[in-house]
Length: 185
Length: 137
Image (cartoon, each protein chain N blue to C red):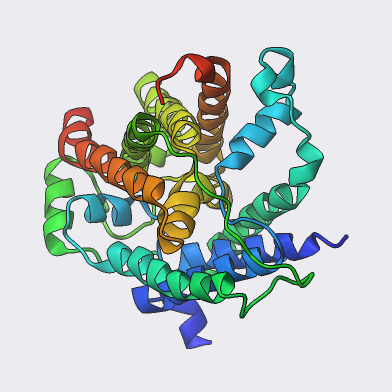
């Protein structure tokens, strides 16, 4: 029981993610998450605007069930499996974020400065989230995959495009963490 | 419902991402600042073990549930599209701390901000679909 309630170290996470990938392929499908954005657009009727979305979403109903599972799993985790939301961050990270004006750093999973209701409902906070979402949706489709599809599946099957995509992921992430976050906050 | 296993797998994957803190904004910030090994360990570990699994798939030692050979789909090859698309995704990832699967997991933690992220992601995917033919590859 103690293990279930404690945070899991990285050397538990890596193998369990690999197990998820294994099961996904064993069940006969390719592991990835971002194609669902496209599928959801198709279901919402995007095919009326662009032929790009004229696809049969029923072929991807397994992936939509996976998504439903992700939401349920997130809810179960939030409610029952993470009694203590402390994060064992590098003290330097805590100091840097505190200097930027972040409060309560490392005592929660998501910073109030981005995720609290007040911030989300302010114009700046709303724009930060919606534009980040647009970048995530547009970028993953343009690159042909996300962290699951490119970084885990693509790299492990030794595909060159995935290496390029992951380099891109890190260029973007580093620009965000070093240059954009300090300007936004 | 033969696909119900994917729902269970989704629950499992979400719990793994949650318990290892791989959905936490702070963990990604820390990773992109190179101040912790945690996320590199998770992703690197997953890739190394998956690479071994992929070899077993490739050699035909492990077949799928229907007895078919497992072949990962080849990724599309454009240089500009993967680097530029990857960088745009990385920007969104670095600012919001969310990637594609975690957006759905975060819906279980922080429904309102995750919903805004998801609507943004759907708009982004829609926008891509509309302009995809005009973009450089």
